[in-house]
Length: 356
Image (cartoon, rainbow, N blue to C red):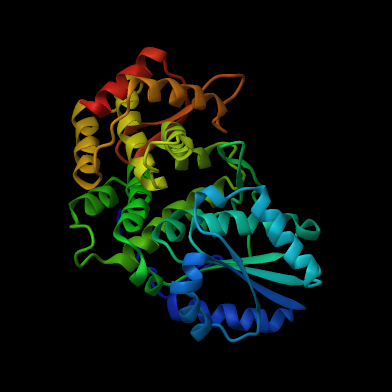
């Protein structure tokens, strides 16, 4: 049921709004860190740093990285590690990440590995990072063109979610995050999915309540399975094909890059077809899922040559076992199942269903 209304309240280490800033500032004062570093990218330095400074009550040293998924790699980590070393940061230092999913993913990995681990805090500034990337302790970087191939799962000190950061977020980035929220409804809460699907995007939506509910859905899953051995895999619905599509469009020299949520939206449509063919998802619900996503996200042309590469990239998915591609699929809207095997014909049908 869609009942959570958590704005300005605390859910474990996820903090909301004004009370979140208060608890963060008080906790840092109590812990007496030897030094505090704040990592931003070139976009959040321009658009978000001022708001952060107006709410953060402690001195810090600023670290900056270039924005975007193409910079989420070990070379960027090396540069930040070097800066921390040059500043003589010790194991009692704190690293705060102010940015979207790239900043929180990469910054978390830097913090987990610097001197074998220093404390870190995420302050997400994109909708995607608020509802997904910054919650749950996953960190990671891309490697050899493959998403999040290197990373660590380790719980962080706090996440502070403040929707005021979204005032400068471009509409396409907002839609990218909204896809993950729709996913939360598909895997765990049918009522929530319908509320999101029937709400006019960007027009008078109860955004704080939606964000809080998505965080609640993810937090409940993570609490039961923090290291993704079982239940947590359901959070990857749409991501098996979606990540492969995102990786291909990111690395291709002539294709327009897809944002994470845009690629995952395609993946969720395709994996709805897989669910219809291999689990118990009804034809009506399959078609409902496609209708919702095609109304919100522009169609993407996937050529035959693209399909060949995308299917080859599926071999690198992190959920795979014994060289078998494992999917998260839906039994119905609101209930997901993990470790599902599909045939190559099923995958071909999923491509055809998306493009039809």
